[in-house]
Image (cartoon, helix red, strand yellow):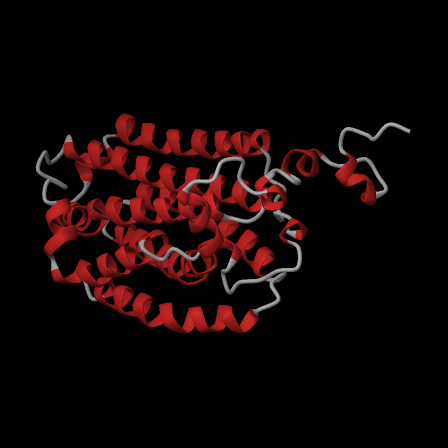
Length: 286
């Protein structure tokens, strides 16, 4: 009897779903090794294979949303249509002309510099995906990376709108990020995260510790502060972006529930939580 096309899913005893078909057993090198021996092989051996984060079978992981490319693009099409409508309403209603000096100052000091740490988080999500030991995790990280790029792009677009009111707004954002004291704990945190090479620690630090705290601060408290200052539209945009972050937490929780080494997760959280607390405290004081 000939083997079926998706023979590795025969144990299911049923017709596999689209998600199961497109996400299962994608990383051939996990069982066969790399076809060509290069220095990158030792990198994977050290930071993926020998990671203290263990699981009997990473293929057991299942994204709670079962996100495929088709599903992702449809979800984001709806979300982007909503945000596009908000941004268009700013143009048609003259919203920004009514913003006061306090609100513009908040955008200048606290929102414009966010592009830099957000880009750092996007790069870490990409790195985790490149070293993840299962195709299902790779896919989740790839879509999370897309979500992070969405945040950066929407923030940059909003900044450009505000520059029609104040051309100098955001001009010193890079200088704020590099030198202003309130940003330095966060800058140090992001730079430490960018050189965390173990894929398991990078995942735990990013999605279990760093991003949840910063997402609450940026998309929650910063958004609320802008609304109090008169910019409720930006707060609504932040709420849309926060829906992406809720999924990041959900798939990470589903993955980490499978690990055989929960004490490792606890140890990493103990290392990263004080760093995040210091970064959040410095920005909250602003």
